[in-house]
Image 1: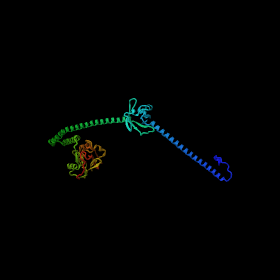
Image 2: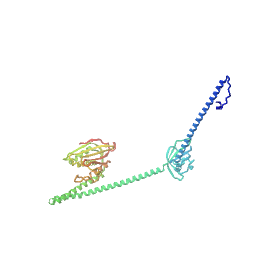
Image 3: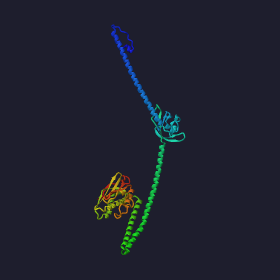
Image 4: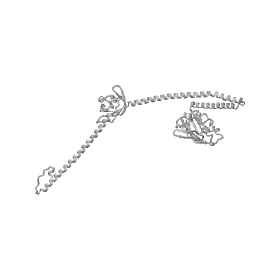
Length: 427
């Protein structure tokens, strides 16, 4: 064993000291074995530590390589400054922003490259270039890093600022053109309304003459005229009367666009009851069932709203005439920030394909021999409601009735009067 571990052990004679010698030799052998194992464990630990150091070194190198890659290819400018604010290093984006090479930027004070200077935090500034040009930039100081100096990010905002300025310019141009077009449109509408008013007013006199002289001619020689001639006179008189009605309606429509809006509290329940009383003669001799729900107090021009409601109720009475029992319901509900007023009937209805024609001037879906009318009433309703900031629409099915609706904004409390409550109408 001694030869194996490289220790010379002298030959021990078989004496009384033989046992002691054997013990000494065994101790030496054990010590040698323990030392070998300790050395092997230490060697293993050292090798493991070396491997970890190598791995960390490789990882650090890879991280530095990635950081360098980002530094070189970042679209933003990056500057490394020393404690005096001088440039130690600059990436290509910073070179492009300041119009200088990295070598030219080195040892330059950042404060001399910006106007106004940015000493801390983040703020907009301008990068001063050698040719006198400037770039709009945002400068952002990163937290201090004593071991490596301070990093400063310089972001080029020039193109964004140009785009924002272009947007502002286009917006201003668009707003100016809208104002110009609006003014032109308003002027055209005023001229059209003035023309319509003048023409309508000037037409009333000759129409009255036609109607009046036709009546005189009928009274003077009507009895002696042939039947066909009397029919001609009747047609002339009826046509003149219809033309007079159309002119009056057109004048009313024109005035509606020119009249000043006089806002006040309007009790729709009271207004509906008054309009129904005015239209009582149209329901005389008929079986008409009215259903009136709770109606609010709103803000608006009372006279205009009365005309709008009157047109809708009159239409409901007219188009339910063929029904043995006419059923007309009136209600108003709050939907978001508007009141929605509805008039439903079980009349003849209409095809929704033609709904867009309903509220136009002189637009009618029925022949005169079916239902009389001028085609102005619903146009007036739309104009009145539009002037109040609302909208109008209709829904129907042929032979199953129609629902005409309009909305009115709810005026908040403390603004042009308090929001109205609701009152029960008289059914």
